[in-house]
Image (cartoon, rainbow, N blue to C red; front, side):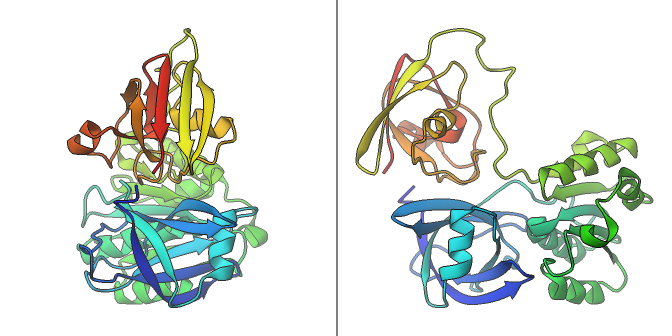
Length: 335
């Protein structure tokens, strides 16, 4: 992980709503430029009371080399990293970042598209909507839900985008404090006339579940429904072994040695977090590399990920969030 991270300099901090900021980050030019696609995210490190916390934040800026990269950071109740970033960062400060990652990107650029965004889920959706319009999409519809008007984010940016779209971008704002939670009938109404479009969803899990149910009711094929699931579990319970003995995992983190049991079929990161270990992690879906560590002894079953190449695997690197024990004893080391 250390070899993949680079330092970015904060160039601007803009408040967004009542509890979020838009962080703009500039590159030094000493390393290859960070290339990304609209809809992807950066994984940033926050140093909080001696702990290095890695968290994923969606990119809102356009993918233009040489320009700062902007990410939306919203406070999370009890969130150590998000609150630290909102309270302590200043222009000129440096933050370590992993390369852009994520698969929440347009499947058919230039085609009509339907978006559902809840809260800070607007960050990748905004980037995708802008890309769809730039690629010539004739219709782009966005349903954007927030708990209240004060907490809504990227409103000015959305207005600019809508004006520039020449009528192609439709936006419906929804505020729970005034209108209650959106009913399925309302979510279904958003899909009317766009039944053949691709749909993209990002927001709180209950919101996305409701939107998926609405799309299914409208006849959307599952292949045309795309969700951004930060923190979703990679492990498929049907793939997990039904019996067997726990493996013994010894792991070195920040110079400390810990030994924890790994249940049959359990992901290594899940076992470490269950035991209360300070294992670095962020996306939990094999895309950001924050839980990258080295296998020193034993064998693992590696699941699909977007980070490691054949050379990494040959050198013993693995992602704890997408690896399972394949031998009775394992030894890992975080750099």
